[in-house]
Length: 196
Image 1 (cartoon, rainbow, N blue to C red):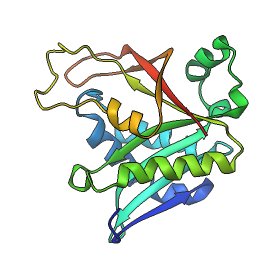
Image 2: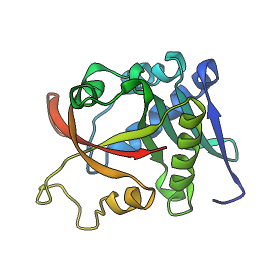
Image 3: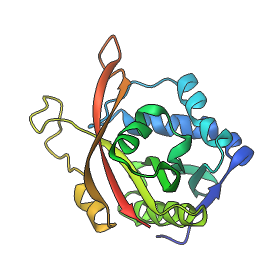
């Protein structure tokens, strides 16, 4: 990772001053395929406050010259919403020992510099410090023949496998409004996990 990029692990109220920048970054990044998410600043800031209030949650903040260029979030799975917890509970996994990694967003101008790798390493270190024994995240499922899939789109499966994550036979549902749509629709996401 470049020396002029700083990564800081923030918890609690230390996250609050960055909500506006984080909301703007999420909206920008998640407009792209495969999410195509039509977010709003108000919703984003309300959502991100979760990481400032949930016990054990953290935001790994990436900055260049004091500007927020990326972030990665994490929190104990026990602090997540029921739709995220339920697949693990039903499969008999111990939710109390699992850390959930939310988004990892990075300004495109700073990609391919090792920051994504650093995000995973920082979240894993934080999760281990919280006595977690497993890390997990989920990724949206979009068909390969999706009409809005860019010709240059590359799934991140190999990147995740290179970090030691494996796709699990567990899925969840999330709801959001796609760009160009008038209503929210349910999406299926698949979990990936790694022992810590």
